[in-house]
Image 1 (tube, rainbow, N blue to C red):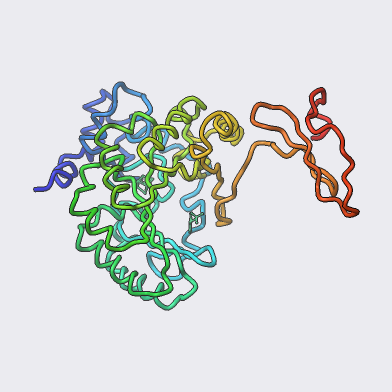
Image 2 (cartoon, rainbow, N blue to C red; image 1 turned 180 degrees about the vertical axis):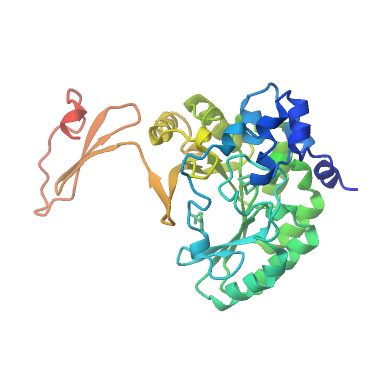
Length: 367
Ligand SMILES: *Cc1c(COP(=O)(O)O)cnc(C)c1O
Ligand code: SF4
């Protein structure tokens, strides 16, 4: 049996096993199994150094998942934008195609808790239906395979989908969203990569939330993908007690770059039922961006976004760099807090030249 399949087979999958391993009273977490699956690969489990550390928090069920804080099953209203099973078509020219209901391990904060792990919600039976939808919708030029995790399909099933998509001339690019390089790097076999590279232009967005997840094994998997010419991006979820810290985030982004992964998004945690204990304030995300932008490589800076509740899509948020904008000038704050003036093109061709660096000015007069 392949190593990755053995990893899956030997995963922890019950509240009972978890309770025993981490000395948690079973009654605290027993009912969680009915709400959202439990699964942890032996590999990812081995990254836990102590109870409550940033790896543990992401993956070990917590009794707080059962508290009702008035959050939502489907905060992004994806089901509303789902014209056929397994497709979420929200934006004009691209769509999500949910091709697998399983993940290598289950993140306790998952936005798609309502679907992931449930074969009645995402099913390979619907794949041909999804392909037919994409085939008929010629405006779709970008297909994002998601789930669940597409890389938990066998090579042949995944290739079937890629092949069909590549036969549609309007599908310009294909993306795969996956947490496999983080949870199960063994899955990135040379055979898989050789298959994937037949379907270029193929992009991959991976999901790492903490620098400790970038182990030598994970980096090797990422290198394999990069060597196959697959541009790699990363999506991180901002999580309380895991990565809500500018130093940790900066380190994560720098380590990703070293593995040739370009940070793409940091998501404000969605308003998902049973995840209130993971949510941070929005200011925390802005503070993190401010601590990275300018202080390290621009390549290391992702977009900080809120996926708008109710289905508004991703909305980028930036710290306040633009202090004033008028017809004749903008006043800007740089990464280190200094203030500068940029003159707009003038209508009569002659600029009123003034101080460009506003050293002694209190920025508060602009906000
Ligand atoms: C995130 C997302 C996309 C892709 O958005 P990009 O900003 O292009 O990466 C597409 N469709 C849905 C429904 C999404 O949630
Ligand atoms: S890997 Fe993605 S889809 Fe799977 S449980 Fe984690 S967040 Fe959800």
